[in-house]
Length: 336
Ligand SMILES: NC(=O)C1=CN([C@@H]2O[C@H](COP(=O)(O)OP(=O)(O)OC[C@H]3O[C@@H](n4cnc5c(N)ncnc54)[C@H](OP(=O)(O)O)[C@@H]3O)[C@@H](O)[C@H]2O)C=CC1
Ligand SMILES: CC1=C(/C=C/C(C)=C/C=C/C(C)=C/C=O)C(C)(C)CCC1
Image (cartoon, rainbow, N blue to C red; front, side, top):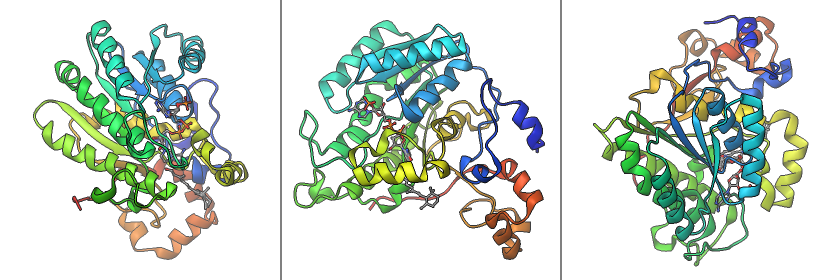
């Protein structure tokens, strides 16, 4: 493992390592130095938040990045900022409204006509806590945008991904998927609707879609993985006044969008994931509390030590903590 001081020096220009109290929430970062020259990536909802920071990191690595967003003015503002900062002129904007299948088809037609290759598709855009509403095609908004829109987009771009293989599909899900159920009898939430649960259902759909897609893509060199980015201070909570205030109050303890993008970047570039498919990733802390995967045995045996790390009482281990963060597969899901 690399000394934290060395890792700090490897941060991209302008990024400072988080202050000690924030190290607990900042999570790890993608340490792969992989370049993406000659590779093309589509990132949905990349005009802001996690998507924008993901676009910035892929552009920094030399990729041709297509920002797929519903508001092209916001997209252009993000693209010109990224072009200026990374020096990569190949950051483009294309209109995509995931709440309208007509717009998704237009995006795909235009993309397929203009772009010959696609190596990375990051289904990142999302809505949360929307008051009850429907997409242009009559689907409940969370399911329509977060899952069905991305489902159609992926389907339309799949041949291009296969032709460009090795290629990766990354679905940005959420820890919230644990609270989700696929309510086959009421997919549109017409019989009962809870906006928090509607979000969770759509995020479970992301995970299940990833698993089935990975199964169907076996042998094609196109992988599909899902992830939870962490709790990130973004505009995701905009539909809820209470959550907007909670987010402001907790902001110091939430990941920044750049920190939140690290799991997406890891899934997109890490060499060791070249043939890993059908998995769900999230950063986990080696304090034994959140760890579901390969917990180091010295931690498993020492619950007290784990408590000290969590409370920040053991200075040396706290200093080492960022180096002990891993992305791991967590939950094995089966269809309901
Ligand atoms: N922030 C967090 O704590 C967590 C986030 N996530 C997931 O991370 C992903 C990114 O969210 P985050 O960056 O936090 O949130 P933001 O609200 O900052 O970004 C969401 C993006 O999705 C776009 N979007 C929303 N609706 C549509 C649509 N109909 N068509 C096209 N684009 C659309 C938004 O566009 P516009 O700007 O035009 O509204 C925006 O670009 C989401 O999938 C979210 O569920 C998961 C767990 C935690
Ligand atoms: C209570 C609490 C937290 C709040 C976490 C929340 C509220 C997470 C919400 C996540 C969402 C909205 C996910 C969307 O997919 C922190 C800040 C992590 C740490 C301090 C204790």
